[in-house]
Image (cartoon, rainbow, N blue to C red; front, side, top):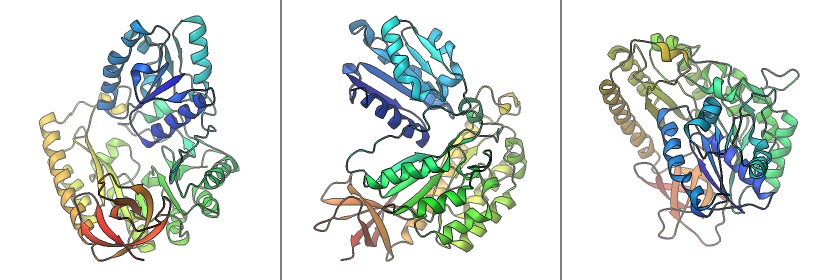
Length: 438
């Protein structure tokens, strides 16, 4: 039996797809890269932005016709779009067999068995007190240096533009003991770096009685033998505590890298977004972070063209780029997500204006990113080796603690998972080239 996975959206979805693959591997399924020879096709969806949602219907248009030649083929759609559409997705896409929500990941094998027996489509999207699947551990592939560990799910912030609380549910934090046990098993399997995942990781433990804080969790992960680096995503600025900021200075294994979305530079727009902080609040957090770790690398999310955003508002976003100087940004035009508060806002920005602002934003950031990379030339960084470079030519690749990609000629005896000191010799558009110091 073979399973074909198609994944859209965030790292949380990538992690969930790994868990699904593991669940079916226990039942004898092997992963295939060709949908035409699959016995089970699973599409793991995202509805945070418009484009991934549109891709799903295109994918179903390709896969459902395969059932004419192979009636036994089972097709399932999970993730955020499945949670949002529920039964309506079955009605829109005849031939689809299973719709499973964000809390039903661990029930998918049983749902597949049920469909094979009854040949009737099924939809299960109820929210549970404890989201199913959080305790499923995906076994890392051989030769893997990094692994993702989900520590919490859901969000209680209800930003006006965001669909996440409606499709992932309210915040739930996994027991810290279970997280530590999972990371320990990953370390024993040879994993050197863990990425702790959640919709808002720095609110970890706030909703659970007698649970530790996120900063305390990081300290426990830090003490696990074999783990060399720790990263986490995503963080909400309002929950960036002083204890968490101090952790960057106190925990050597915690990478000096942070993804900290600010979304917009205007207080007026931030208020309409329901973000719970001002631009000055955000900059204060950045200043504290850089006092703790002067060379910390920051990335962020930006929405341009939010309803009511004026040119003056947008200019404040550009001002934020100049003040903070991010390594990289993930920027998008605002798109309406049905079911959110902002979907009812009427003062929409014209699409042409949104496109123009996005181009200006990205162009300005490109200049900053190039300057930051160019400033690395001549420096020496510790690189966690991930394997042969996609560039080929005998080069290998890895990432610095600041999450910058470095390609370098491979010295004799190098192995995946090595930590090597590399002198940076060239800055490219999105990466660096270096030479291993022996």
